[in-house]
Amino acid sequence: MDWLVDLLRPHTLTLASTILLYSFVIFTGIYLGKIKFFGVSLGVTFVLFVGIILGHFGYTCEMNVLHFLREFGLILFIFSIGMQVGPGFFSSFKEGGIQMNLLAMLGIALNVGIMITIYFLQGGSAGETSISQMVGIMSGAVTNTPGLGAAQQTFLQVNPDGYEVSQQMSMGYAAAYPLGVVGIIMTMILLKVIFKIDTEKETAEIESDEKSSALAPHYATFKVTNEMISGLNIQKLHTLISINYVISRIEKPDGRIIIPTSKDILEVGDLALIVCSVQDEEIFSRFIGPTVEKKWEREKGPVVSRRIVVTRTEYNGVKIGSLRLHSAYQLNVTRVNRAGVDLLATPNLRLQMGDRITVVGKIDDINSLARKLGNSMKRLNEPNLITMFIGIFLGILVGSIPLQFPGMSVPMKLGLAGGPLVVAILISAYGHKFHLVTYTNSSANLLLREIGICLFLASVGLAAGKDFAATVFNARGLTWVGYGFAITVIPLIVVGIIARAKYKLNYFTICGMMAGNYTDPPALAYGNKVAGNDAPAVSYSTVYPLTMFMRVIVAQVIILCFL
Image (cartoon, rainbow, N blue to C red; front, side, top):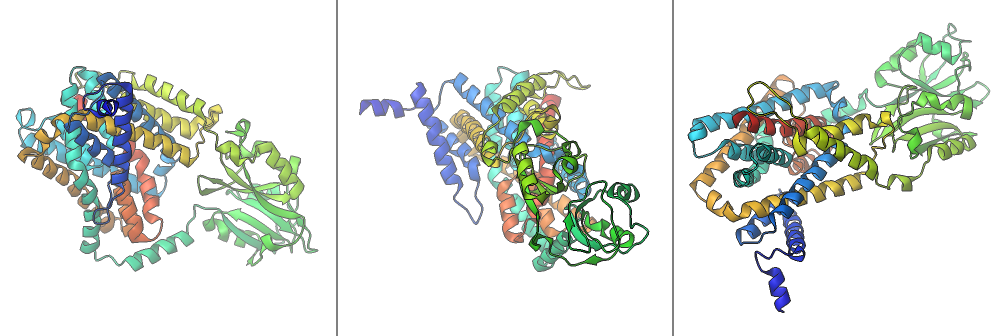
């Protein structure tokens, strides 16, 4: 059994022992992270604490290997996040998203302001807590692991020999993280008490807003009664009604159902199924005629409605109008479902891999179009590794570009965290225009992301474990916990009160916005459980992209400004 003892002995630096150590840290951390304390779990972040415990007892690995796994894990994690949030990054600034993102930016500014205030109150550079430690505490307080990784990587760029100092960030992060998670949930409960929230009333308000939502395509059947438009073809009608809409089907008085092309004519007595935004329904009621009840899907006849999945790369980035569906197939596209969101199928809408388009027409024509577009779910399950590694390659190049700003002693670089994040967002949002296939199914993206964060956290924990107990389990460590709790709670209370008192946001929307502002899945899970609807998830996803980007950049800027 000597071979087993040698393999499990601390300070063993063989390849087998390194893989064994990482495997143990990761699976133990994931398992323990599922345990709930008062209904809250720390999730995959528990890998960090398991790594710290083993590092404290002398388990380690060769430093170059540890550095590589930490940085590569960070790149995988950051890039996967960028690919996930990229499609919604720019759209999150539209409509109500602007308001929520501004509130989230206020929260980030308050986090930084409180952190810097504490830093100078405790003595600044002459105090017990350095700026690197304060950045680590702030990252833990807002439960933002990418910010920690970006700050450490930036610090080592400026001070290649400052590895031991960079580990102080990890210790501050670990000290502040647990109460960071708890603090968010406590603030949600506190706001509920302060404003005497009636959850049933909030739920009814959410349901009412969903029914009147103007974002999703809306279906309505109109009977043509306006003699002024009788005899006009569809092309002419589009010049008179300039808003975005699609006439899906027309039923003639004799019962014939046709798929209208630009040359087909509307006549008095026709029934027209129109796909438009809900707020535009009144326009058609006034211009065409009254709405009528009709179950089109249940009608018997040659015209059917089917969904086709775009899975052939040559149609990635192609406009719907260029498919010539009317002339070539006698089909109408009524809507496009992208990542669970229905979009109105306008001629200028560009298709992306994984889009599910709803078409109406004869079954033979639909089958022909399906063969052309692919319609193969198996194809979607194949990972697009070319795009992924092109993105990582470009991300590292972008992250290495020196950016000189006034007041900074050295040029700023986006680094191995910021560079891949920026490139991933841009590729996932605009890659289809260059015929890059950016679609990755959620399972593959989540796998890459979890592997990356586990490698990163295990490496950080093993490196920081040696001095963690001596640094944190004392009066200074308790002070760090207090600093972190203040950085967590005060901005949330301020932003929450402004969101509710001034902007009258729904309570569940505020809960999701808080969780998204701190990029904290456990807090989102709590909000979803309390709400019983998807309102917290919607606001979480609205602020998450910009917040994640800003926290990664801000952590680096603080390090560069104070060095």
